Image (cartoon, chains in turn yellow, purple, cyan, orange):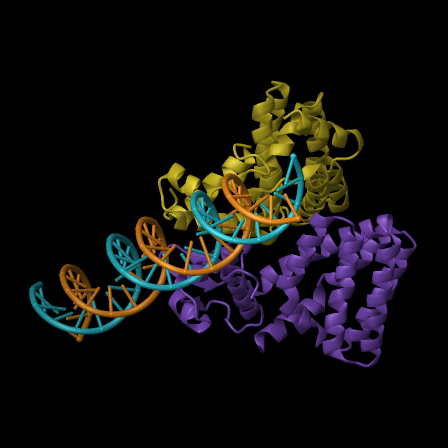
Length: 216
Length: 216
DNA sequence: AATGCCGTTCTTGTATACACAAACGTTGAC
DNA sequence: GTCAACGTTTGTGTATACAAGAACGGCATT
C-alpha cells in the first residue's frame, strides 16, 4: 500500500487501465472510484491528475476523466519511438558493458531460451521483459533506462498481443541471440540496428497487431 | 488562467523551476505556495503531484516536495536521448515531408539565419526552438512530436547556456543548413546523423556546459 | 411534432478543517 | 558536559463541506 494512498491508487488505476479493466474511452467517476477503493475523493483526484500527466487518461475541465484510446496509429508511433530508444540503449550497452550487466543479460537471455523451448508464451512474455530491462540497465544511463521502462510499461498490453502471432516466439528468441552477440562483441551500431528492427513493428506485423486489437 | 487553477499552478511552478526561481534541491512548501498564488493548498498539491509525475520534483512521503537537481551527468544523459529522438524526427521528416512542413521548416530556418547574422543570441535561441519544433512536426508522428517538445522544454535552460559559448551561434546555423538540405533531399539517414551530432553534447562542449552551470 | 430555453440535478473544483507523523528543541539524568 | 527522551511545533495526508458549471430533461412555443 506504498505509504501513501494517492500513489497506491495511481498504481491500482494504472494497472486497471493497462489490463483493460477500464476500457479506452470509459469515463472514470471520482465518486465511484472513491467508493470502490474505500477512500475519499481527494486521493482519487490526486491519482487521476498523475495519470493525466503521464498521458494515460485525459481530464477535461469540468467534464471528468476518460481513459485515452491510443488507436492503432498512435500505438504504431509509440513502437516507433520505443524501437529508437531500445536501439540507443543497445548501442550504449555495447560500448559500456561491464561484468555485472553482462551477467544480467546472459541470465535473462537463457531464461528466455528455456521458455521459448518450452513454448510457454506467458513465461516468455515475462522473461522477455526482464531481458529488455537488462539491456536498458546495461546502457548505464539512468534517464534512458527510466524512459524505456515507462514506455515499455505502456506498450505492455500490445506486446502481449504480438506474441500470440504465429511462431513469433522462436523468431523473437533468434533475434535476441543476434542482439546479445552484437552487444557482447562491442558492435554498438549492429546492436542498435538489430534492436530497432526487433522492437519496431513493420509491414504485416502491424496488420497482425491491428487485427488482434480489433478482436479484443 | 487556463480554466482550472490546478493546471495554471502546474505551469506556473514548472516555469519557476525551469527558470531557476525555485533552485534545485529547494523545498517547496505547500502553504507558502498557496499563499503566494492566493489559493488554497488543494490545487497546489494537485500541481505538485503532476510535476512529480513528470519528474521535475520529487515528493517524499511526509517529507515534502523538493526540486530535483539533475546534475551534469543526468543532463548529459537527457541530451543523449534528445539527440536520438531528434535524429528519428529528422529521418522521418525526410521520408514523409509534405508541402506545409517544408514551408514551415524553410520559414523558421530563414528566421534563424537572420538572427544568427545579427548576432542576436536571444532571438536565435527562440528561432532555433521554432526550427526544431518544425522538424518534430514534419515527422508526422504526434507521439514523437509530443515527446520531443516535452524533453526540449526540460532541456531549455541548458540549451540557453550552450548558446553563450564561443561562436556557437554561427556554427549552429551552419549545421542547420546541412540538416535542412538532408531533409529536403530525402536523405533520412544523413538527417538523422546530422541532428544527432547537432543536438548531442560531446567532448569540450560538455565541459563548457558543466562550467557554465557551475558559475550560475 | 420539433426545437429552443430554462431549471434541476449531478459532478467537478476549491477551500477548510482535522489528524497524524516527523523534526527539532529543551530539559533532565547520568 | 553530553546524550537521550519527551513534548511541542510545523507541515503533510485525508476527509468533508460548499460552490460553480455542465448535462439532461421537461415544458412551452412555433
